[in-house]
Length: 100
Image (cartoon, rainbow, N blue to C red):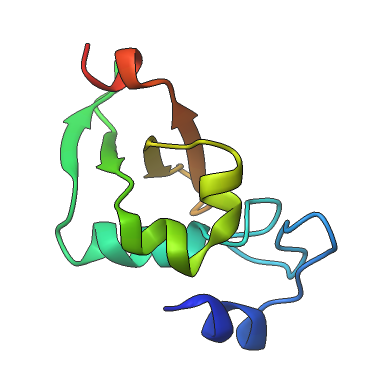
């Protein structure tokens, strides 16, 4: 799901936050794109202390070109997961955290 598809499918405010109700509500505009990568098997999956899967994704150059917000915020890695209520959560990581 590329930028234009996200903008067509979801209501996004000026700050780049998805406002449409649903699993991406309150997340950055690039979250559905990154979540789709996870569903395609990208990233490194680990489990949190409760046994829930959490995927760490490395941000690539294409990701930054498609979503300039990622580059502007200097995001190089993210952790992304679906919580028990079905909402997708995303957490930008410092490079040192991602390699720990």
